[in-house]
Amino acid sequence: QKEVEQNSGPLSVPEGAIASLNCTYSDRGSQSFFWYRQYSGKSPELIMSIYSNGDKEDGRFTAQLNKASQYVSLLIRDSQPSDSATYLCAGRIIRGAQKLVFGQGTRLTINP
Amino acid sequence: EADIYQTPRYLVIGTGKKITLECSQTMGHDKMYWYQQDPGMELHLIHYSYGVNSTEKGDLSSESTVSRIRTEHFPLTLESARPSHTSQYLCATQTEGTGQGLNYGYTFGSGTRLTVV
Image (cartoon, rainbow over all chains, first blue to last red; front, side, top):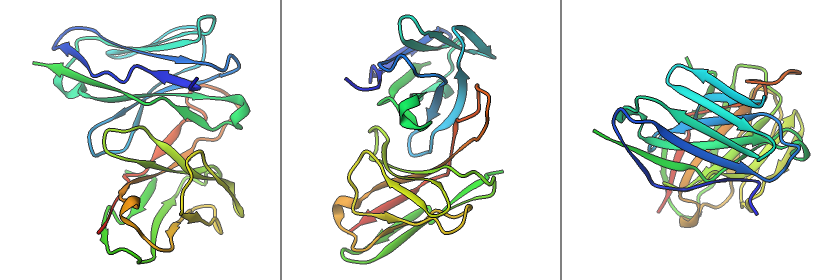
């Protein structure tokens, strides 16, 4: 089982709708989690981080963490075509000496 | 303004050549990482360093080597390039800190796209 797992997609969402991206992790001791956005041919950029159970909102983005169920999600409200990208989930795995472990990424397409 | 720099951005080189991909950062971070990523595929950790004179191999076996003589510099070298080395190489630093949240997140460089012909 991968330490951080994502549905690779592709996920297709109409413009203006809510895009929901999900990620599960296997190490119950994992702490901080991060969502990165990566446009085709570009490097990943950090968009959200979360370490406490519950929701964290930043503009159109909401990260959700449920430690009991070991999942992390990212909601994108009012999706725009510019949100079309691959979204990477990463967790800070304690036994990995603070390295981040990345999921395989979910490719998101927003249809105008 | 980028705080982590990778050069070159693009490189096309012949089989058998020795190449060094440069990665420099101005943030003073101890932890640095090299990832390999094929188009549309996941990131693979190939090397990392937790400080000067500290280097470790990552999860993906790689024929490359790294060095960390200075905090700000973490070059990756391929002694003899092969077509199988064609890929994008991403360098990253990790934010330090005793708290949580954005601490420990990575900042990536712009990457080097390597093509071996």
